[in-house]
Length: 315
Image (cartoon, rainbow, N blue to C red; front, side, top):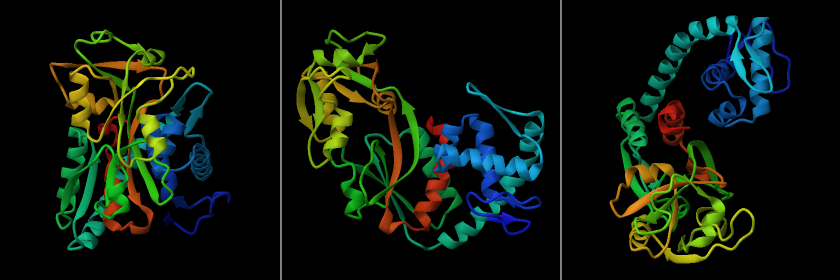
């Protein structure tokens, strides 16, 4: 969307006198994140595209808005003044679009939202606020089995779902990613790891690791329960489970240990289970996913709502 006249496409020099909404949106997000990579993730674009949008906006303004170094990003004094003036105007424009979208969504049917493991408090706040903004769109919450993270989307049982990454299904679209946190190891209070402040990933070779059963793809199960440590040492495989509760019960019985994301550990407080952060592993992350062939206005509106509240979800 262009305000003030037609604008060029990607790679086309910015025209003075025109303002691209995408450039303004990118600048506002960068002003919050002060990080080009995280800004790109929030906007579903590459880091290079973020740089291109900011450069185009600076060309239109005629001055630098952002100082970039290899170590940090910060706003110039002009950038700080500009973002302060821009925010209320952008909020008013977005509210107008939201009102129009709410009218379009009225009577269009429910939005079926799946979640894997735990629909955390922050996520449920987003769902509640989405329902308040779009009263004509009923939201329905459904649990997605740990052992079948993508099946409900493929079978059209849910419209969109919050699942643990990675997602490499060709038919599925990965939207906003959030809750990037170190992985935690759930252990019995009787386990030697209980009470530790931190564990090294190589120590996973010392205990059977609870694995995921069922139709989950191999790459996804390997990410949740790796068969080798980063150095290549085999990790003993423990019992396979289909649900989170099965896994925690086996952990409590000291029949294995289990890798979990941080939101799950915060929600499931148990007297018989201890949660210890693990270093040396990729961070866990949650993503909003939908089927590319069945995307609709309700899904897009909800994805926008999640993007708007990513700070609450712990990105």
